[in-house]
Image (cartoon, rainbow, N blue to C red; front, side):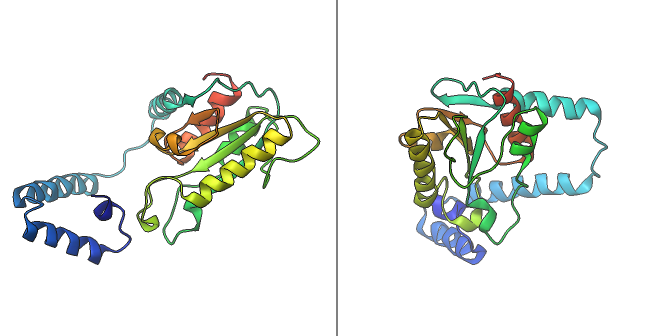
Length: 211
């Protein structure tokens, strides 16, 4: 299943499905129904124009995204008026488009939180550290969740913060099931994905103490 979902080449996916049909691992009727569902929703999406976005739509999306952010581990942060942001983002280096970044930091600053982006926690300050870990589902990556390299970067940032006697929080822009892979992180905030909407929601939840 994972090989089909996360392959980076469509030819390989097609071959895997064909083999599954021949081997009896995949029922033809199940495949037919899956194709039918995809065609139905693809046709529905292409047959209607994008409606104008109303203020009610915007507020509904904002309220829903705010409610989706939650503490996956540990106590909520109390960051005050300043924090440092360490970004761990492998999704931005692939061949395909990815959600825009920067909304997390921009929203924090809009809410009057001084939140510079740094390569690692800097010395001579005691403000909390927010480690923004992006791990969206990207077919080109060939895997789900954060890679060992990303987890190592998170661990390194947490270790530097601990050595400086500073609080560190991982903001997980990915599915909450990936929290178990982040060993040693006492506090994890889950924001589900790296879209601008969820970046802004996470920033509001942190800045306003809504967690």
